[in-house]
Image 1 (cartoon, rainbow, N blue to C red):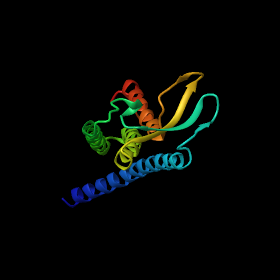
Image 2: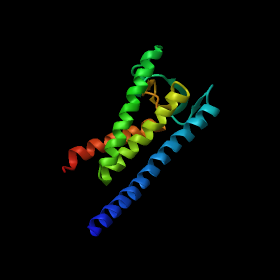
Image 3: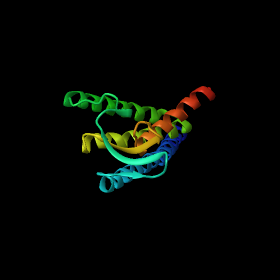
Image 4: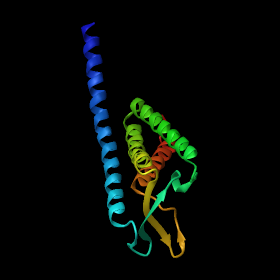
Length: 166
């Protein structure tokens, strides 16, 4: 009986230590996103900054979800979308907790980015997007650092789903 109690405590301690690493990773992604957005908001709000022939930094405020989808002036729809995003983050946190190491890493990337954009929806009532990829007159959707991490996490998740069978 004593052995089972010690094993349970050791397993719990390992679980907590493992999750602390990934929670730190989520925090780092969130802080990278915050830092980049604050730099842009404080320095580039009125101008477009030319980086090279393919990238500009140009602040726009996105009131929709990814790529400006569901943009609306309706506060009811905005709040409903924000609530749904919050619920999705809660589900991702649940899957993060019950997952193994590789999936924890993937969920950490997505959650870190999602929390960055979710924070902006509360603080600014919009998400600051500023990376403008373009080729001549064709411009891709403007995005931010959080979007990069969310997209990267989803791509890794899809690759993992197709290539690694449990």
